[in-house]
Length: 390
Image 1 (tube, rainbow, N blue to C red):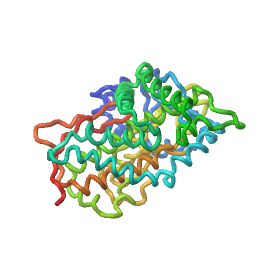
Image 2: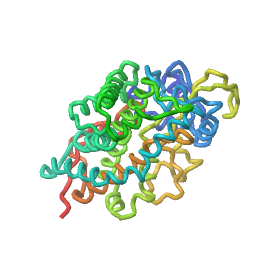
Image 3: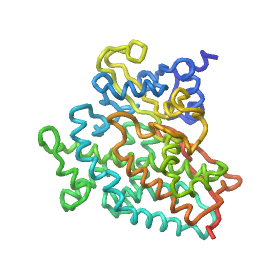
Image 4: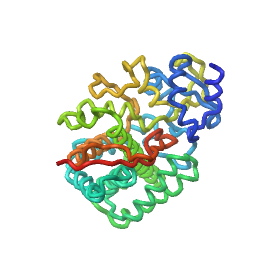
């Protein structure tokens, strides 16, 4: 049996549908038997499945570099995701303020109105394909209005399509359209300066007050497009499914303080950014196995969030779980710079849906097909029926 498990990891393809269907069960086996398991994927890497090992790597960026954060090679640097100290801190310094909770909360009425406008578009139908008509346009619209200050709907749709391909295929070629969109946005802002987030990227200074290079600007905007158009969408799609399938969840999410603990648990349980990469830059045995310079490790955050050594009964969705040191946004200095925006979107999205809709159920005869790739398992399509709140 063990040979069968190791054979699975030997041949693992993070973008293969059948492999993605099995991977949660295989990771559970690995956590119990060999918490660091080798795979031949991407030229070979060690998959970390235990929470403690993920933390060890996160607190030692001088040994485990973020220079190759994707599990497949990409054609463009994506700062600050692929930066190590000290340059990483310079990028976070100018990104943290505009993406802080305090800075974003002023957009709450705008985000609430976006959600209500989308609900208006399907509430009379009594059912909806939730991903394409709410989860995607809600998260994409928020990114466009709050971060990009861009009302070009055709360009936004191109962004959605391009990011979806990147998420599901992960090839260098699939990044080209996203980088092209980033270039469009930067060129427009350079020609027509505004007082907004993109302008702050153009004017940012790092490493002794030098301006960002054009590649750094493009990479940063590409990184925001990838995160803003994919990962939060996946978490929201998961929540839509759980509202239809998990008894009592709707009632729990109607409680005024549901987000104080419940949002962390939903993030832990969904873990839509499932895996990221690191490169070993110093020979070491910090993880209990010999690693040499040039080895790659896959940080499997989704596995860490299901580690029974860290979370009691980890395969159960428990909105009262406390404490909840979930790592859905990563861990350490590279914890997601967009986490506050994601939290705000999810909280508002759930609140507006439940303010107007109730009694969610999956449309009979439809299939909930999960996505593949880095945003593992979230529904690709989700046909829901619902009732109006009386």
